Length: 126
Image (cartoon, rainbow, N blue to C red; front, side, top):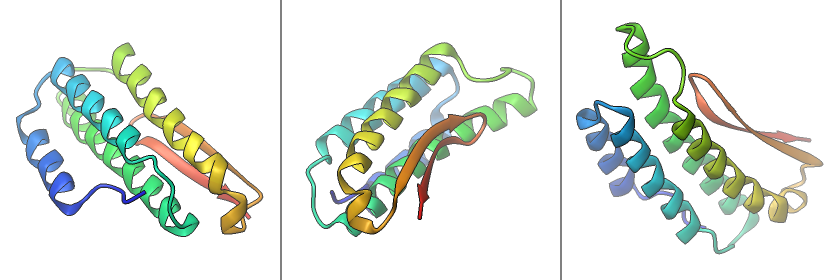
């Protein structure tokens, strides 16, 4: 895996400047899910782990930036069902990758979760 490029990360940040509704956020998360799928070819375990953590941070950035701004203005309370489902699908893809590398990086286990408002979290057990 290569993880998200600097250009991709910059593009997501710029897109977030224009995202003002859940439908637009869902579209971005859909694109992110596709990008994770395209990047799922394995490489060195430590590089794959870094890529997984980086993809998780992009998903987390998008939802926390959108919902933190909206929640503070009281536009939305919590995630929409579609966004929660989309985050779960991204988290599941990342978990699939971790299953193949967790032992190779010296960990005894892992967990991938989603939580409001932060998004996707990755934890390794050593």
